[in-house]
Length: 134
Image (cartoon, rainbow, N blue to C red; front, side):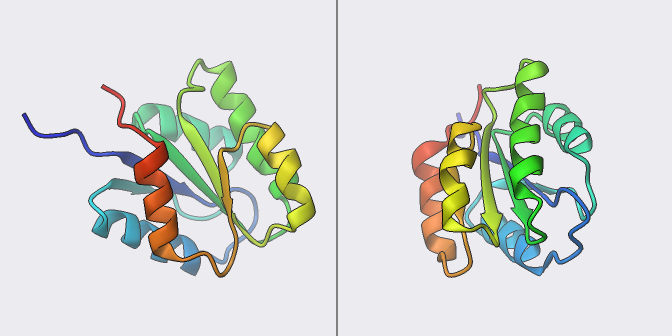
């Protein structure tokens, strides 16, 4: 029996329209053997959560360069919990000041990656910390 692939959703919440990094990461995840869903830009937390549940993903990777991560990232985690889908791992990336990391971890994010993080290190984190749901 073939091992089940990790299903990853890359999402851009809010009004941030800069998605080159998210697209690079989605391609990197695909090349690493993950199944990848990319939602595109300008997604609400509600849209992201609905898609994550519908697509039965193991991981949601949120990307935000606009500074709205303090609201958008915790909101996604909160909505996943409300929908009984808090077994979906949530990570974040983008322009996120160091002083915001603890607040995001406290809100339920499992990892934060900022510019300069290597693609290999992100893939390795996912392979180590995320297991496909049966």
